[in-house]
Length: 321
Image (tube, rainbow, N blue to C red; front, side, top):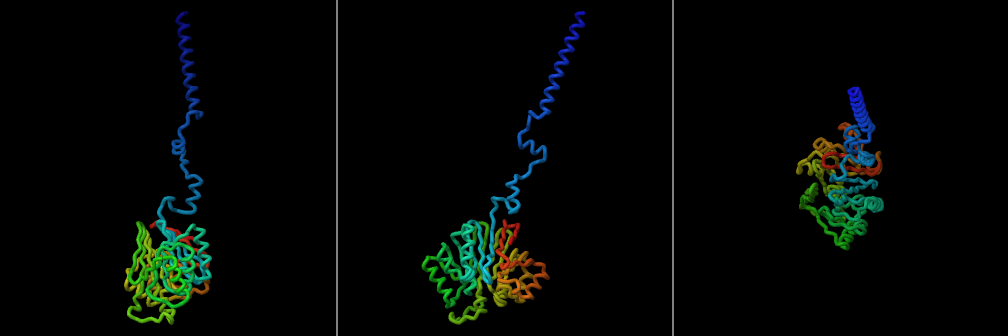
């Protein structure tokens, strides 16, 4: 009888022990023991970007800390004004007209720009130099790069007076001039078509003025960009003959939609992903230029349809308008 009681007592202990174990496993299974958040996300496959990160990726494919080059082609009518930002520096190529300077100032203000480190005037036509004196007078300009000739007109005199009054360093580019940073290399190329000729600054033909255009190349990482001012046929031929023509991501075409066979030659050599034309109306594009671009499948961006922004990290390119 005593053995039976001992056996029943042992059974009760085992049952109690088993019950306790079942309860412990049940508690764990109900989730009172939780892995840390990182472990849980990895296990459930829910390592998704936050909504904040998602918004950033929709606006830019680049990492927040990436070093970028941005280029804005401004809508200033039948005129040129480009603004580049790189390594904290601001580079402006041409300044639009006198009447569009308020548009340029509004863009600069909206983007928090109160200083132009390098201002490049490709040549002295109003649609390239028109806003120069007003911008020099209202912003800090570090350096002014000019083609190496003189044109005796009000716009030129106003620009030079503003540069003198505001102590702007002026460089007349007579040979290739390079401006470099850690990640970029910009080359300003002048013409030698008129070396040794005596030109009358009071009576300069428009074609001569156009062919004095400084041509600017910008390299950032593996990407290259080309800005052609108003270079006409002879100037384009000179550039291609004396410069190694690279593959350019974007080319700013010359002279507001005009066409020369030299443009087709350049496009054959450089194979750009995009071309930009600074123009006031799409109908003013030369039909031959439209045909060539269409045949080559090169997207054509027109400033008459709005500002154009190009962003690159040196490899990837994004374009928006």
